[in-house]
Image (spheres, rainbow, N blue to C red):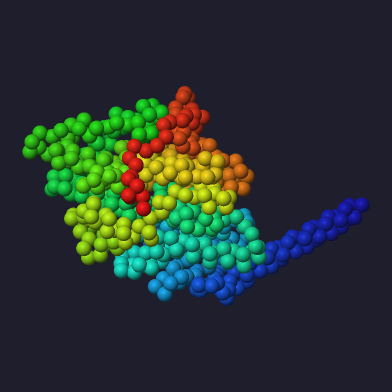
Length: 550
């Protein structure tokens, strides 16, 4: 009897081993098929483009190179699953040369495509601005160098490349990527999403405006869509800080200014006790004249001089036409003074080289110190607004297509002041023919967030530039957009968490659908349920004149 039992055990073990061997063999065959299908994409013909390469990348083996591939991006890429990497180039005009990269999961594709945006002047594939974390979520993903590689300065004098940068490169990326998704996965229909922040936010909005059928859902952060006038904002800040040799503030003085703003307003605008950021900066009526004034011929980090006071007033006021008084763009947001892209960054003349829009518009005549915010602004707009700006608030074609738009902005962003985002969103609502607008477009304003990511608040919602995928779906803006687009339930709030926190539930706060803002009620300030979303006033105090919404 014992022998028979042992024989049965041996037979069962042999059978199990055979099954495991067949499963392993089947898996290996599936992997081989996926790799073969990937390499076959190298021979695919896509009109107006060419495939440069198509290669399978094993899990954890991709090493990003080039601009923007710093240690953090390489570390994030080291945990990528296996994917098919396709490099392509598109040339919609003889002057164009648009670099495109598409990543296709070898397994575990979620049935969706995700286009991702760039930052600044682009010029390279932006791996760390949505591609890496998008692939980890199961999306097929793509990015473009926006047609200005390797350096946007080389596009000076090439109007077609300006148009590629302004809108066409993103559409070409989308068109080519969708063709490869259809080919690789042998599908005819799938959902498409786009996410981007800063320049990527501009890409997001211009796509909704010009190419409303390209995407089903769009996540647009801190959009630089009012491109020529946001450039005037940086130039305005530069001139303010260099009006006289005594106008610049030291690092210690900027800390003093920021501390004074927070002392005057933090925790009094709906925020919690002890907040080191503002919840609704519109409710902060900080007057820089309240700062300690230096005595004549005195230099100190604990006070400001009259030239410095004049500079601060100009920064907060924002760019205006000196002859007509018309507003060109909002001014610096109180509470954002010390964060990256703040006015201190544009005090240095060497950074004026980043003002490529002004160079394109004025050519050799551009002088940062002599720029005329009346005459020269008109000249720049006449040459570039139609190519670079994405100010059209009529998104009805996008809405009728079934598209959903989620906008977000940091309330401590010194690079793209949130009031510009608010006024654009309000215009979208006013021009909407679809149920008042909020049925297809929502805006989320994030207390304590700087430009796109980071800052003193709870600011991580899984957005582009973020280095991780949120551990819970209620804190993932991209997946909230997917749920809204595919399930029809519009998000009222997203639970943001402190970036870099080891505890997934530590330092949370709700981010509310505007015009609601999070207001503290009671309990631990680090817990999101200590806050409620309460309606605040709607609108922006600094609305550009219609002349500067071209």
